[in-house]
Structures are given as C-alpha cells and as structure tokens.
Length: 103
Image (cartoon, rainbow, N blue to C red):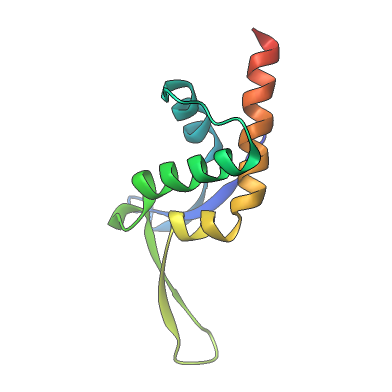
C-alpha cells in the first residue's frame, strides 16, 4: 500500500512522528454506502472523512513556530491533508482499485 505521511506528535515520547492517513481512508471507503466513482467524488470523500476524523482535535494538532520571526500557528492533520488533497485523492483511488483487482 502506498503511504502518505503527515506530521503528528507522540505525546508519550515527546517527539514528532509520521502518521500514514491512507489506511484509514481506504478502510472507511469500504464502509460507506455510496461509493465515490469520479475523481471529484473521491476528492469530496477524502475531504469529508478527513474533516470528521482529524479536524480540530487536540491529539492531532501541533504548534508550528518560525525560527527567524515571531510567527506561530496551529497545524492539524486535516490542514496537512487539504494542502495535498489531489495527491492523497489519487493514492486513495489507486489503493481502492488495487483492492478491487485482488478480489
């Protein structure tokens, strides 16, 4: 399975770790009633599922601070997905197609 890692925090070990969002999105795809077919439908599916799962939940948020200026901002997994929505949509579509070929 292809991966798409975002950055999240491991609270127990006090460090940042990569988190692969593709397995969750493919697993949820299997559970939805109305399956997306076109790219735009898949894109909407990825955005909605990501919003529901990762938007504004403190365990998926990190604070980003500039090294050179007094800039600081909050970033969550959903925001990282939105920045790469087309790429993630293509990966999810490919993985769903690969799973269909296997069965």
